[in-house]
Image 1 (cartoon, helix red, strand yellow):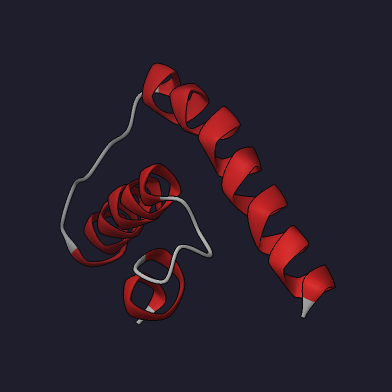
Image 2: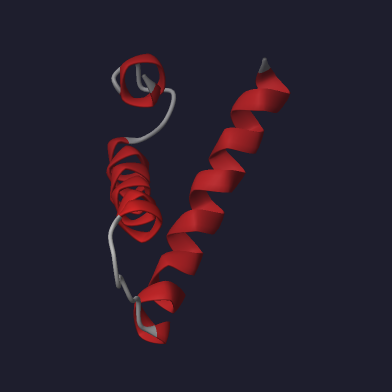
Length: 64
């Protein structure tokens, strides 16, 4: 629904939508699969895009 209402309408950029899909998939694996491990490097690489996504969502909420 996030993609339908925010990404496909252009409110959230395509690359941020793809990032959201990526981290959602990682969260699902971490929650529901056995013995899933993420390296420190993998997690650190997610910090900057996560901050960009959060900042954009905050902008959308302020404009609402």
